[in-house]
Structures are given as C-alpha cells and as structure tokens.
Amino acid sequence: MLNKLNIFLPSILAMLAITVAAESKYPVKLKFEPISTCEVSMLLNSHDVPEIIVSSWKTTNETYLSKPPTGMIAKYDLNDDDIEEIFLYLSGQNMCGTGGCHLIIFQFNTNNQILEYRTVRSSSDDILILNSLSNDGYRDIAIRLMAGTNISKAQAYTVYEWKNGDLKQTDKTTLFQQSNNGD
Image (tube, rainbow, N blue to C red; front, side, top):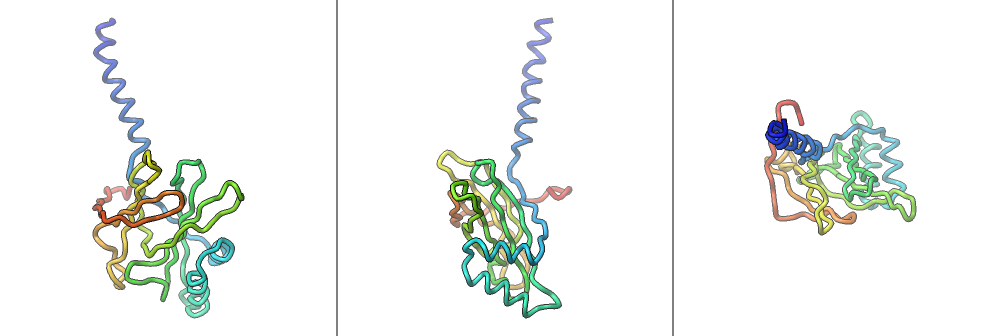
C-alpha cells in the first residue's frame, strides 16, 4: 500500500500545483462595464483629473447630444493592497486621437480615505495585466493602442510598468491571442 501511495503522491501533488497555477493565471484581461454620464462626471470633477480631460468630456457631452461620449470602468488591485484601482475609459467623438481614447486610473489613498487621480494615457479598452507584483514593486500592464485615427486596434500590445500610481511606457511590445471562449 505504501508503494502505491508513493507512486500516486507525486501525481496528486502535480494536479494540485496545476490547480493553484490556474487560479493565478496571467495574463488577466480587464473587463470594462458601462457607467452613466453622471457617474463619469462625478469621478472627473472630484479627483484632480487634469482640466483638459474634464473640459473635453463636458464639451463632447454638450456638443454631441445625439451621440454622447461613453464611460466604462474596470477594477483590478495593481499593488496587492486588497483595494482595487479603478480604470476609467472614455470614448466618443473628438475624445480620441491616434493613440486611442482616454484611459484614467484612480487609486484609493488609505491615509486620506479618498479616491485619487493617478494617471491618464491614450489607450483602448483592451488591457491585460501580465504578471503578479514583482519584487521591485512593478507590475507589467499591456495596452493595445489604436492604430491611427481609423479606430482599429494595433496588432501588438504596448507594455507599461505600473508602480505606486505611476504608469510608464517601456520599449517592449507583446502579442496576445485570445482563446475561442473570449478569455
């Protein structure tokens, strides 16, 4: 009986290791959900977002009444503090450029107990978290930028490093192919 256990034990441990690895599988694709115009305005007006973004949102809402801009959010804990950062993606006429539309990241400040604006980038809503937090405090995030003003997405993702609320573009790109089930 002991010999049979010795034979099966490595198999059982390997299956458990695969299960654990599957639970922490990277990359993680952010899932954006629509939010109301009012909710977007509240986020933009109360958290030190640069005035050019706030005025662009307001002007676009006032100018394009029949097709107003849209806001979508996704959440992910980027710094492993058990508090999710908020990704706000804004799109609409005159809000997007050659790199994409506005991606704004907010982070909760536990000292002040407020949500704070951290950074804004031209982007799309196609964002991947590539890895767990590294020993030096960085997390790699891949963002598929737009391929010019024709609203199509670039083939490769541009890799950024996130650390303490700062998002810096690297010189790396990566390709990622979605599985058939959309994951």
